Length: 570
Image (cartoon, rainbow, N blue to C red; front, side):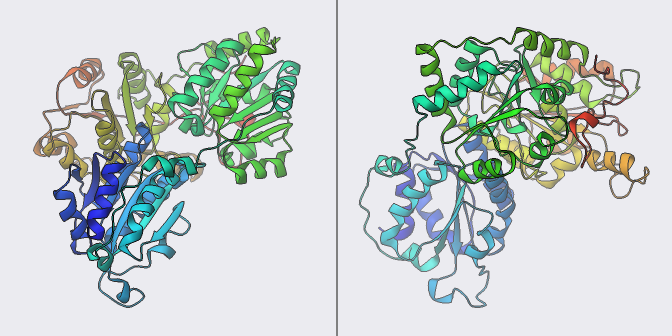
């Protein structure tokens, strides 16, 4: 086979059913081979969306999404999506067409030094030098991307190597999978140490991150908490790992976290972090005056564990797969019964949820985005995948929506990339075609990859899109209001803004709706969720709406601003 055919056959061996791509001269041999294969090609509006769509596969399933693009600007267009996946530890394969090997390092048309461009944005970058290596590189990369701390792998594929004849061996992909199996377990002494801390605690708090955002880890943390009933909070990426309808599930921690999550962290005496990045939103706050809780930290990333060991001296830490560690702890607890004295603490967090409920300006004549999220949450079916863009709508969705399953709330966390929602929803739909997919976006965020309205409409994908349109870059405008003396610069749109709903209709959506009045809202949301085919619902919302609570940059949780509508702490 030639190199392009070996690549495609290797993807078929791995069970890849579709790729997201955009063709071009430097990748045409691969697309020609794809055309003769069983693999479906999803053509997005640009290469960034290709990589976001592939990441949507990875984020919503146990598969690794694949994007294939051509050289030069095509591969640099994927840089943002690759960095986004790297920040959120999302496995991804990106194949980049490249000029012929002998022309690399010259001023050849559309040449870019892929290795240097992606060195800090990807988990790994591989330059293929001969066709005989392609099979092992592709199959190894698939499992390497999923292993340890997952992340994107970029494969640089010169034109001459795509044409070169090589030997295809048909190696079993499982042999590559075994290379990356994590054998680390908690020993009996480590389990005993963990439970000694837990038994001595009166106010333990679980902090669940994206490292547990898969079925196996979610099942284990749910079993663990059925036994112990420890109040929990989650990161943005950890949403849905524990059922958020539980009374002691406090929701998202952080700058725009729920008030009760941000209060609970101030009162805990044992902070148990699992599968979290331990970023600035947590590290600085946990270190603030008055937050003197003991720390237990479990994560597969040795760098992060070492950072915490260096800066915070946790009483317990473990480098390894969180699902495996939880299984070890559960088995230990079953053979060594552990009783906790935390009833007062459980009641305290339930009272916090009752006393500090999320709310909004109910007297405004304009629809509030928080109001939309609150109504939507009561209407969502249990089995749904929700994607978001980035902005106020994202934080309000994270605050208000009750997500009951892992990998069901799909958002750009660490990199915060606007334009994420639509292409990610396309990937999530293809990974889970029987599950309802809802893309929530804001008017500024959706414009970044608005071409995916065309992809959804022309391919007749049954994706629902909810656009919250406040004619502004709302989150940035909020900062201008609060921190820059209400000087609003470059964050408002004109009143004669185009109708996104009309654009959706022109793009081929089956149903397109635009509303501006509160009394239309509930019926429109029900229509969106219950109608067959693609639906676009544009809701005009209040430009002046602020997201609360908020912990301002440089401030601690004890300085959280509750805003004018959320009740003060009792």
